[in-house]
Length: 296
Ligand SMILES: [Fe+2]
Image (cartoon, rainbow, N blue to C red; front, top):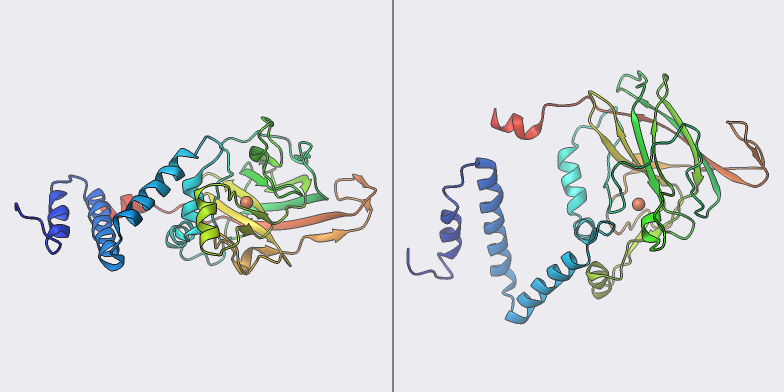
């Protein structure tokens, strides 16, 4: 074909990918071409609009660093992260539901003993969090990895403090022989996702607020089970119905109970009010890899 027209261009581009050896890659890319072309046909962008889109994506990449992931924020705020999550985590009967990883996870957080205080000098009302990690039948899973991370009372994660290099409100635990874990941190608060970049510009231009309801993040891994990425949301938070990244699920909302001064479960003398969170996580048995299953 020599003459490419508005009518035949899409098929011509799809055909050009016809020799892609990997069939999955071929589907991923030709479907992307078809959907992008359909979008352009529908909205008929001007050259200025098309260039504005390119500049938006360019700024999204340029603001990314090791500690700032603007593309995840973009995916989150467009609901794509939750859609990918939903498609990959159907059938959660009897196991804990999942939600977005979010942009603030840092791989290999410092491993600390059970019962540690992970506050690292960040502010907030004390929180004693405890729980178990179990198989779907309730069998406790010993030596499971439990990564936790969360915001402080001002709504910031440790990585958002420019002058800070050490971890705070972020740690890794290993469950004990009974599948149990426990630690001290602070009450998480609702917080705005970073909105001083291109994603923030999008939210402002569309009259959307940037807030997420308060939550504690968990990433839980055990041999033979799917890694669980989830949050536990604080019941009563004003943003539960309008999470900027669409991450809320009813089954993940918990009461963080307010406790009076006294002796905490680990014997710590509390001279002020504190909060307590208990949760039992159930992991799903590992399934054969979906991509491998598709090829079989
Ligand atoms: Fe978060």
